[in-house]
Image (cartoon, rainbow, N blue to C red; front, side, top):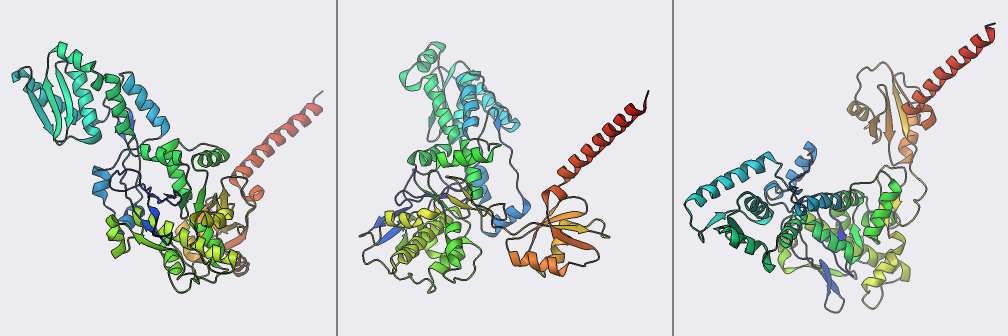
Amino acid sequence: MCSCSPFNGPLCNSVKQFAHKPRPSRRMFHLWGQASGYIAHSCNFFLFPTTFGILDTEFSFQASSVQFLNQYGFNYNKFLKKGIPYMNEEQEKKIKHSILTGNWKVRSSLDKDQIKVVINEVTRWLDLAEEGDQMTLPGIAGFQAFEVQLVLRQALPNIWTVLRDRGVIVKKVSQQHRWYLEHASGDRDSCWKEQILLSARGFSVFFQMLVQAQKPLVGHNMMMDLLHLHEKFFRPLPESYDQFKQNIHNLFPVLIDTKNVTKDIWKELHFPRVSNLLEVYEVLNSNLNPTKDSAPVIVHGNKCEKYAKKKCPHEAGYDAFLCGSVLLKVAHLLLQRVHGHVPTSEPSFPQYLDVLAPYVNQVNLIRAGVPKINFSGPDFPSIRPPILILTVRKWPGVSEQQVYGEFQNLCKFDVRRLTQSQFLLLTNKFKDVRSVLKEYRCHPTLQVSLYRYWRHSPNVNCMLQVCSVVAAWALLGFLLGRSSP
């Protein structure tokens, strides 16, 4: 799930992996009054991968993620039953080629069973119907309605179909009348198939609108969001890291990560440590923020009373509201630092963008080789603490969880298995590295040291062993060759 928000000078729309209804593009944050505040309109969309013809996407759930979403009231019925379809460009090309060339087939066994029932029902009706008679297939709407019509038109030459509010209307016609309907200006086969493709694209149409708008895209700790946006709506993730950066920069030339911005100024302002977006928002709304009273007033729109009455963390629309609010409040705080006081006139959004310029296209990373990704240039040098390697002796079958439990009372480490008896320890604090090296200097079973790639990497060790064997055989061959007459 993700909660990125594009600003449209100022604008912010919620783009989330799971949400509710398709809505037209609308501004989420816009000025009201004499530039004294903003009205926030929050949008939710529930998405489900497109299943059409040869396209049948696989995806998986992690048990802890399902449990997490359940805790925050995620509606799985809307996600699974009413999810809006979406596809990336490569999937769209395959679907388009299948539809326009007439090579489209129903591949899903479930769809085949449903289509078979519909065809049998229509066939039985045709045996008794006269030309001009019609029947209604109720309960078929949206993308499925296009699919059913396409199959019926291909299977039965003496019927015609029309989509209405109450369902799909099937009408018995002569073959001559059928030919006329197929070539009518309002229902040409090519136009109709384009409508099918548009319906199959679903939410991807909205994504393209965001790309074409070329507005700033705002998120909080948004790296995973960008990965999902690239793969689900643009193209499969490239093998090249630099290509990924270039693609994202072309799609969204201006990125602002509020996690990166707040992390940079948090210590300087002596704000308490926080762990999530809601806590950041609450700190900026508290008396700890010196610009609390002069900051922009942000209110919810008429159709967003739910968020005005209660907090809904980890829900798309609410997270987007938090993210946009944090951006405005932090920008106001930075503006005061630049001027040394609160400006007498109400600051404009372009002024906020000016003070945010040093943070543009800098996206935060957690426990990576570099602290953040620079999408508009080379990355910054690493300032992360060194990785530690733990070598375990006399503890057979030790797991990552057991290693984590061993160190958790001293400090927090991410633990990754390297070999059967070796583990990598990762942290974002230099003091934790120093503490562990000191405490476990002479430990009888746990040996901790700094990780060196050329010394500890299994790949390097394997390569060195192969080279040693080859060199030994070469030397042996050379010696034997010299000793022979």
